[in-house]
Image (tube, rainbow, N blue to C red; front, top):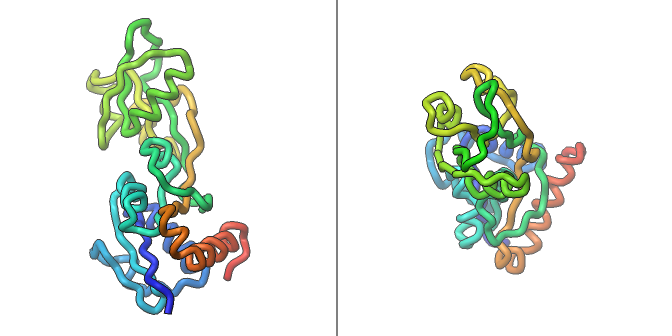
Length: 212
C-alpha cells in the first residue's frame, strides 16, 4: 500500500475550486469535506491527508515538508519565494495583481507610500519601473489605505474590480496575471514520485479539458 500523500490547501475560493478539480480528476472526496471545520482531514480511501491553511502559509508547509504538495496562488509564490517545485498551473481562481488608488492621483517625486499584502513583489515592481516607494504591509482591507491617507497607492489582487469601484478607487496598472499552482516539496518528489506524478497526470487531464 502506498504512503499517505499530504496536501496543503488554502481556505476559501481556491479551496472550493481545487476540490472540484480533484473530483473531476476522479478523486473520491466525501460530501462533508466541503463544509468541514476541521484543519486536518483524512481521506483514507484515496490515501490522502489534507491540511487547511491560510493561503500565505501553504508554501511554508510544503517547503518544510509537513505537506508533500500544496495549492498556492502565483501571487503567494512570487511574494514568498519558497524552496518548492511548481509542477502544474491549475488555471483556477484567475485574477491579477494591479496598482490602484484614488482618481486623479499624480506620482510624487519623493518616496510615495504604497500599501500591500505583497510588499516584496510590489517593491520589486516599482523598482523595475524606476520608482522608489515606501512600502506599508497590510494583511487585509487594503482598499482602506488611500481612503484614510495611509498610502498613496495600493497593490492588490483584482478579480472583478467591484471592490475597488465600491470604494471609489481606480486601477492604474496591471502587474501580473495570477492563477493557482500545484507545488511540491523537493524531498517528497524524490520519495513519493509515483504518487505525485500520478496526481499531476490526472489533474493535467482535467485542466486540459479531459475529465477522468
